[in-house]
Length: 135
Ligand code: THU
Picture 1 (cartoon, helix red, strand yellow):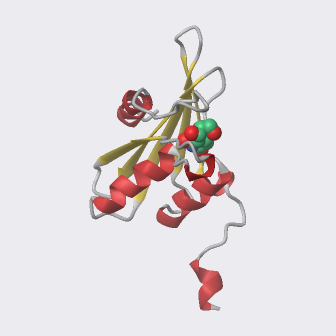
Picture 2: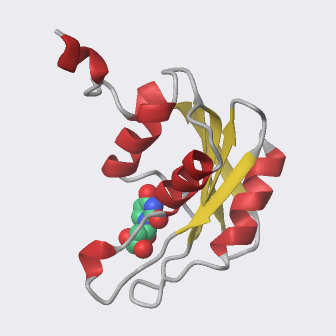
């Protein structure tokens, strides 16, 4: 299990701006250089403008001058590990090889932390990628 990334995701989860849904999410990307970039969800009164935690973490990585994800962690509160939404799966896939691990975690009501892991290819089979544009 990728403990440092999960810990950073958990730290930023508590900084989420989730005043409308009350659903706090944290994410942490490890880039090719080994650096960690964390992000949380940022909601808006105009609901569709909400930014997911994964998107925020990826934006941090790109702003840091990097474009390759080696691993990503997503965490929420609740009894089921946080699964990235469809749009975030596509955003992760933009910067990740098919075998990149996606660590999904949750902080249960009991305080226990549950984890699941799978690859981005498992989360997003048949993805739309740059090869389509070049054909
Ligand atoms: N959310 C994320 O941050 N990541 C996901 O992959 C799923 C959903 C956020 C968006 C919104 O602020 C809240 O969770 C409820 O949908």
